Structure formats: structure tokens, C-alpha cells
Image 1 (cartoon, one colour):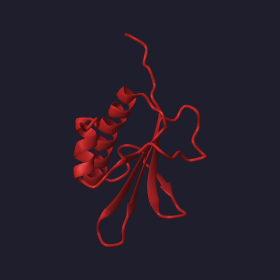
Image 2: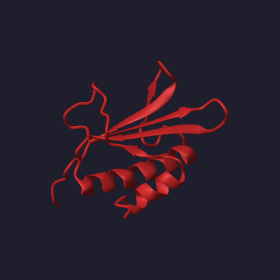
Image 3: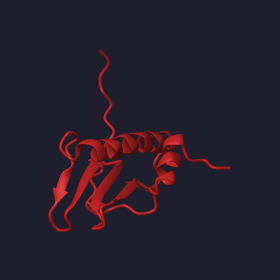
Image 4: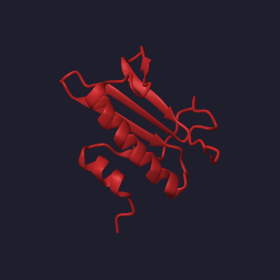
Length: 105
């Protein structure tokens, strides 16, 4: 049985997987995910998605939905609307993800 969320299956169909077995040393404790997009040089974009190892399945599903929408927006509008940060070392764009609980209104 496939335990991936619908968003994660849609991403996989596009060739994008979410890795949960590695985590960058430079991640902060409040980070739950990481997204990176880089021009492959042949006109296509390479996408990396990482989630904190051991993340709750609900949070992983929410990350997949968020990542899918951010990737689509990047393809449509570029990096500016969502605040992607430029990584000069490899000319990629990155975004760290952290879950924030908003107060009730």
C-alpha cells in the first residue's frame, strides 16, 4: 500500500521526491523542511525536497502540499513572490520551511 499523500504522489509523478533520510547540518531546530530549485542547464529545473527525519505524517503531508504549490508558483512567477533565497555558490534558489501556529482571531 502506498502511504504517500496525494500531493506527494503528484510530485513523484513529476519526478520530484521528498527525502526524509538526510538533513542539512545548517538546519535550525525550528526548520521542518527544505526546498531547492536549480536550472539543470538544459532548460529544465531540478527540484530537491527534504523533510526533517521522523517528521509527523500530518506535517509531511502539509509539507508536500506546500512544496507542490511553491514549485508551481516558481515555474509560473519565478522566485520573487515567495521569497526564494539565491545561493550564489551553485546558482540555485532555496527556501527553508518552518511550521508556525498562528493565534486564533
